[in-house]
Image (cartoon, rainbow, N blue to C red; front, side, top):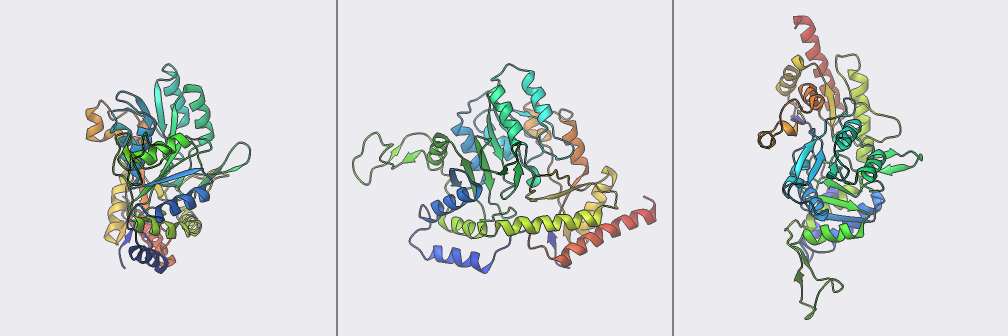
Length: 392
């Protein structure tokens, strides 16, 4: 049996052709492929603006810059995420506050968020950064109401969730990333993500001024836009108007992302088919499978099960011994040595810490074959059969 990883890219002949055509073109960077992807991605999500950048972490950092985050500003995020969700704001000196998770969805618990907000004067917190963990959408509508009441900006970390959706209180379908109820959303195009561009990311927003800022900051704070220049000496003239970064993405990455975007609906459909197979096959084992509410389309970047803490490492090892490379995602960010050095400690997010002891991400990607999927399921059943036989 060939190794089966928890996530894997699918590169088709169409993807390769798109990249080769771009490599043979006049532009390898700062050409037409980037705005082409941005427009198609914005149209797909139903949002006004999309800004393509070098990776998801850069996207988070640029959002923090666009929102004017300053040293000492308080920003709330979730501990169950890759550390970039916090780091992007920490780069500017923000004080990170971790809000515990909901035990069903593994998302930021909005009841606990409200408790945090109520405990301080309104305006204390500058931004809230929830994560659509594993591809499950946060309740952006409720979050928006809290933002209006308590005066913070919302940045949705949707790196796990392009193609996912949810239904608002009016019965209207909302695509994750359309920013109807959020100021900004961010995405990642890492190889294990839905749109695999090698690396890459994007920011979406309906706010023209925020878009202008992130677009400016991604390329050193430089512009050639005649409408923005303070003077104009000729066609060559450009100005560095603010201190920015080199967070650009290449033309061939954009071409690959555009080709991958054309298959996103198929990817979401296949991921949900795989999830249902897992659900049905594992329901009679001592395993908790992912929760889904009515009215949502789960993007299923990850399929995370929960098992008893005394079984988790043994199951992980057994799967690895059988060439199934499951993964534990994530170690709670507030327990990382760096964040501990800032005063965070174990015990401040008990639900997240309990989740970490139980969680295991099974292989989930659209090119996972039915044969490999059945092999994974059979191997899990074999593990529990051995447990029962040995009485452990």
